[in-house]
Image 1: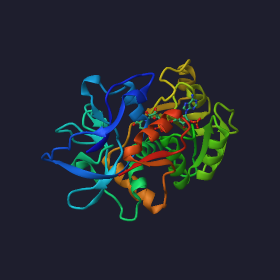
Image 2: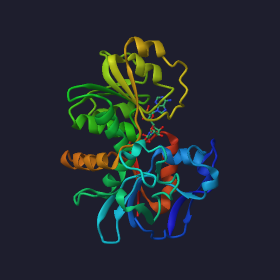
Image 3: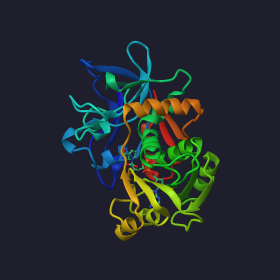
Length: 322
Ligand SMILES: NC(=O)c1ccc[n+]([C@@H]2O[C@H](COP(=O)([O-])OP(=O)(O)OC[C@H]3O[C@@H](n4cnc5c(N)ncnc54)[C@H](OP(=O)(O)O)[C@@H]3O)[C@@H](O)[C@H]2O)c1
């Protein structure tokens, strides 16, 4: 079958080890279902894997992809929940120390057919598009948990999203605005700031700009480049919710004094659980949200999508269709 996989890794040239080619069909296994993929979306995670971050070389070749939606053998339309718990784990799978995402231990979703734990299948609402369904399991689920489980904000609250164009950032803007939060956004790029306003942001600022008001919570995916700003813009008792570090995880200053003196909360957040994915799917449907799509290409042209993601110029999700 056709698949998009990582054959080798390079920290400086991630696309060198990317192959679009043939991989063996998945073998049906007890407790797992074979899903015929209809759409998948790219995440920064796929670039990290090609760079050798989080994916040991001895597991190669590995089909990439965390996100997907498709049809099971009985014809049911499903969204694939990406967090795979270890055997015997019960409770919130995001707290399982041995959990993995697709493409870390098990082959990923960028393939014509994908082997998925049957317990990880979430029904796709009939009127939801495949592109929307495929955008939910990673970036949108992460944004959902950051905003609604971990930030401690309520409608009317003021949230700053660092960075405008990333998958998690656009999801935070669209979800936050739909939930009645006041969403402010930073971006290095004027065009992306304008697009953030169109998505529902109340106000936009250049990266690092002084804000007219302190905020209740900051959604942090950028890391080192924005860390000090995120600390500085919070009201006393506010929260930084951090899920990633695209610009690196070693900020020049940890800002410990400001964090303890102003009693800030630093909350780590990773993905979301299956229950949250089902709630997210409901929320998206009820509010008629459509994740903003930067580029849509067939699986066979996945390299174009990866080149676009690696450029850093994206605004929203890159969708692969099958
Ligand atoms: N923990 C989890 O479960 C989880 C889940 C999903 C993602 N993540 C992580 O979250 C991060 C974001 O992922 P993503 O897929 O949404 O997209 P991404 O492509 O990594 O996001 C790029 C975003 O970062 C901003 N940015 C990048 N470099 C910057 C810099 N030097 N200064 C200021 N802003 C900068 C961009 O903003 P502008 O271009 O608008 O300035 C853009 O919004 C990644 O590190 C990813 O691994 C973690």
